[in-house]
Length: 224
Ligand SMILES: C[S@@+](CC[C@H](N)C(=O)[O-])C[C@H]1O[C@@H](n2cnc3c(N)ncnc32)[C@H](O)[C@@H]1O
Figure 1 (cartoon, helix red, strand yellow):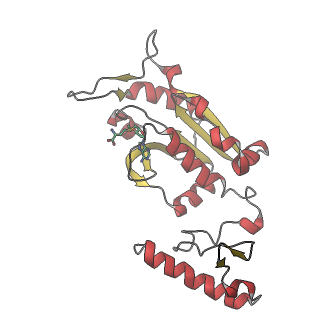
Figure 2 (cartoon, rainbow, N blue to C red; figure 1 turned 120 degrees about the vertical axis):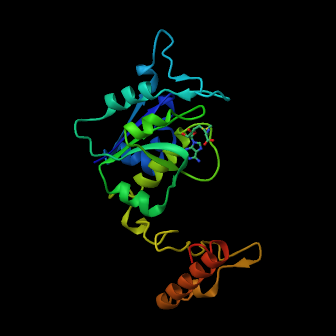
Figure 3 (cartoon, protein in one colour; figure 1 turned 180 degrees about the vertical axis):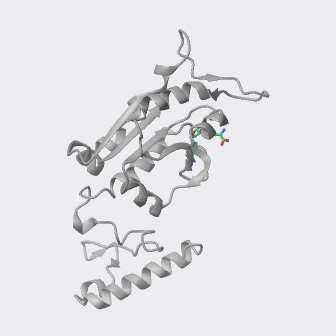
């Protein structure tokens, strides 16, 4: 089973949106599990400190390697096979193939930093993989972790029905998805394209393929 362990200063942010809808149903059905651990449990002293000032000076605070390592070591099972991720704008950007690969595995351990980030030695010593969800800066790793888990969980076998298996979705075949329409047939003077009402499945497939390619070329020439 896909088992997610999250290390965070805000465990109450989990499951959050993942407790609802598709992911929430799957969580209830036991198709995946989620454990959110409070990094502060391994914090230092009376105030359970988890951060300190940056070596060399500069703004903000840095999360301590010793505290995070203790939190991680307490969370890992013996011979834990799960990939260990740390959320970071410096990391490799999440892709659909990567989400699919993780979804097929034993789960993920995800460290969610706050402040300026973490002491670099933690990443080296615990061989963490830095992962980003895009080229912008969030105030903490939690929302990135939720996005990554959402992308993975919906791909776990049994979470989505067969009809919505996700195989024709954006990025799956290296292209963006074709446009969708539903009733009413005409809305604010705009009609559903005739081909979709033709009942000719071969023509519909061809139209969808062509539209997907056109949209991909226009919007994401890097994918086409
Ligand atoms: C305020 S940010 C720190 C940004 C860092 N000082 C920098 O310039 O790269 C705090 C934390 O939010 C998380 N975070 C921010 N943006 C992210 C992104 N695009 N993807 C993944 N995690 C992100 C990371 O865990 C980061 O350590």
